[in-house]
Image: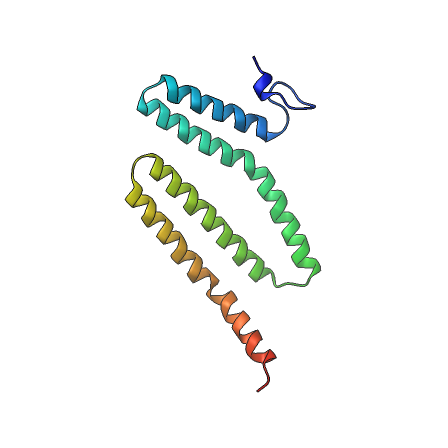
Length: 141
């Protein structure tokens, strides 16, 4: 019964989040074959949120590694924080657009994506300014 979810070194679903992700995907497929549209939509929302939840722990590890590397390279923390905020905005905008698209609201999803892109451009202005100033200083006058 659990063979399609088995992982090496773990229980039926394993200690690795991939087992739980496969289980939620199986749950979604099961609901979409046997349930009404509303149940299928809520199951899809649950699966997307569950996937995001399982990845949060890994994302915090990556952020910590990036902070350590920035500290070792003497990079200004402001730049790292800005880049991490930009990445967060991109993920949240994509997640919101996918959920809205799943609900059948493609036009709202496109507006969410556009708003995310505009926010990213606005937040990137200080970094772009520093890059241009550095290039100007390197070029001979």
